[in-house]
Image (cartoon, helix red, strand yellow):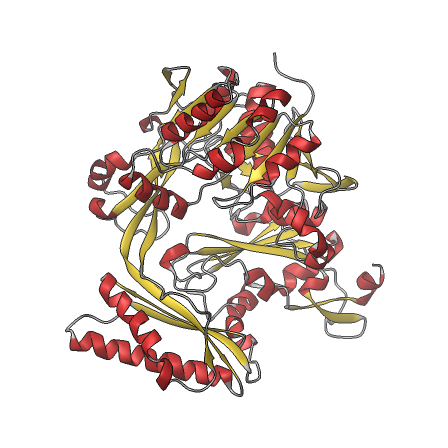
Length: 605
């Protein structure tokens, strides 16, 4: 019988390497039904795949077992909290065995289930022969011999089935980040595939929890409000209801804050089209979501809508495409930026001369970046000469030895450099493999999912989506805010202020795309922000990075603007040579944009 009251779910991890402070915090506060963990990113999968290739018992987030569960299993069992985690990476069975060993050592009665079927690496040759092309770039399928990982993104229903079977701890491989939360809602409330609005709401709850303290003050635009408390930041808790709405909160007495700003920034984080956030279980529409503060550190989130999920699953492969190398040095003193540029230029000249002497091809790409000279701002950041900069010199090459040659020349140029060169002492950097992402869609019936529990393996056929998947309205037909007719926006009664005065913002990546979400501090600001952040302005702001187009999406529920920039991250991830290959700072650039707004709106603050 499904519950009629809310369940409380704590989000304990947003990436592999996250602090292990969340679980003790949750258990100390008490009152949780579930703790969920998200460890995986595309590049994480490739790293785990290399670990598994060296040792068949590796390839999962080992610290989930040793640092998170081991010290806390007894209390987890005492409180009856259920655990859901994608810590299994590319080897969920090995992760499950390791967890069971810890349970046995403590003589606890906890049941572990493992969800398998996402790993398609053994089918690399077959998939290559079928002629799949990248769903974003149209590039051909990579050479199967260069593939590091191939994983389908699974949804929440297999996890929920494992909970139905009585599992206390569920370990998965690659699933969508929000699935670990949605699965708890499916299990507890009995949600079926046709309850699309509830599934969308549960998915949004998962999206808020999936990055841990990013919903409670981490990476927050108003960082100064929480800066002194982030050492003890509270991890997010979703109080999920049967209709899919929820309240986001945190444990009492912990640091950070839960407010419409912190939760709204996380809602916008890396969602692309907010009317078409595609997941294996539902296509979510967040455009009419509302955020309401209902108490100290309590924000009610409602209004998510769902449409039928697609009949395909997204698959991401990572493949090795040569090598990259780079290192950071420092210059200080008069004209430090000019000295750093001269140093970098001469290092690259030396390295290229060595390549020519060896009859080796040139680097496939090089990049010099200065931190301290406002290079990230392009033509909008013409800064005065700096007396202190960091200079990064990086290059890509198909041969690891050629990439390493750059590092030798970089360290060997020290005594012939301009004055003021310094650096943190330590060993020389080493070349690392360039891992590129390849994404495509596969019919869901071709992915063989199974639940392994209590020594048995049970096939879990992936349910066909309820109804026919449908695309949202074309962007040109969607509502956008309209400015009231108030005369000359540069005339009397108007004032120009930086966007940060009017909005919060957060940015992130999807492959080589950057996503910038802008959330008005007051909904009355929305028309003026929309008008200021035109396609032309955004293109100009990021012209020094942008190779593709710009798309803007409006969200009437909050007045937010979500902006997607295509081909703007230099390849993204570890394929990029950039200091910020994930676009995490792009929102900070945009927040300095001047916005013309009626003065009386600001006076009402």
